Image 1 (spheres, rainbow over the protein chains, first blue to last red):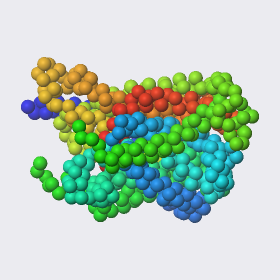
Image 2 (spheres, each protein chain N blue to C red; image 1 turned 90 degrees about the vertical axis):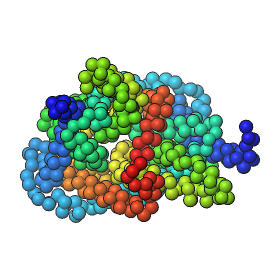
Image 3 (cartoon, chains in turn green, orange; image 1 turned 180 degrees about the vertical axis):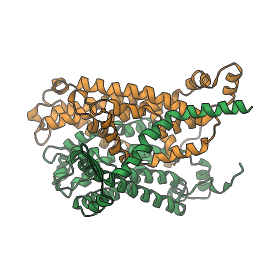
Image 4 (cartoon, chains in turn cyan, blue; image 1 turned 135 degrees about the horizontal axis):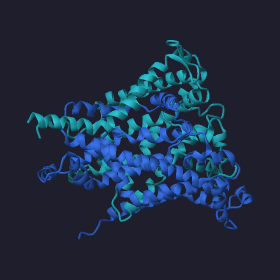
Length: 299
Length: 279
């Protein structure tokens, strides 16, 4: 018996090695290296020299760092709630069963499969101030459209707007959550004389909070990792109005070859993401409702 | 059958109306871009814009795709996708099988560790990986884009493990009695049953690599090694006033993911939905 046990142990460890080796080589070791590098002045050819907290101190005294933090936070504040609510509304519409449901679901998700580079280029053209589609429509409505990506004030909102194209992704996640709500609840509510609005706020929304929670966490993390749009559409401009954090990191580490400083930036970002995620997690008992929570252990 | 009430019918009508309206808004960019892609340079810069080009310039597509060696970019991308899918499916399925079926010392702890590594922002490893690969002389090769991704990733392993948990264990036992060893059970019995999850992994791998920009941007220098995304970005930098050609090239780059999406739509949407619930 113990021989069999040992065999299964060995086989188990062999089996997970495709993950474990990758994890050690491409996550654990790089994370250690990254931490070390963030305390050094790292140069591609000259190698490392220990400078302690200098990178972190520098960071806080650099204007671009604060600008990038501000841009990313602003984006997050605009984009996360907008995509959350828009995705939710779309999912409610998609959840109504008609013979077109499948078709709509397929079509609305479509923009999400298009690569970041292709959609960035498409939207550069759509946002073109003179010949773009968006300003053409605004003109039809009698509004003179802004210069979008060329305007300090409008470049960031333009990137937020463009993201609405992909809310089908969020809607699909909500849709799965909606499908999990037992229909007996609605039937019972209807018998009790509840109207659709009451149903939404008393049944749908509370039971959907775990899904909203998931979308919120991934949305916040995602908003701090914007790169492709910023790099291609505006390259951080005009006048640094779209200098997203990762773009700043890329510029410092790869264009400027300041790998040590870049590592410090990466760690600070990790810290921000971790803090925000923890905050959302900590706040979750206040507003997230898990249906199975009180059922206890035995089932 | 009970006849639907007027209110019910009104609700369906209103929903369909709103969804069609939204769909038109979402699809308009495609129509507009296609129209631009078929225009002559002069018509591109006409205001108010003309939706239907006076002459369909289908040769724009041919021009766009030959100004830069897009066939090369395409083959490079496929090459990366091929190796990552092959290695990735093998690794993920083996790791998932161990987590789902084998009892070994430290399994639960390792599973928790694996799940928690999903929280690590990949930017933390971006710079040290670059330094590492540079030391190994892997810059300007496909290796940095292929080799790390051939190992099992937490996300896919988790997905596959969850799927395997739904397959009855009696199958394993029966196979064991028939003389299969541990790995034969995986490859002969379970893998054929895991087609849906293998499809999800391959499709997501395809879409990920097709759309990846930062990775190729950092690791590839020589134009002949560019992937499709990087190639398209290069095209933009080089021909940034040729909107018609740029739109043609972008549209072509959109087509393969759209075909994959069309073929695997139920798997993709089901896959996303099942991940969503896990929150």
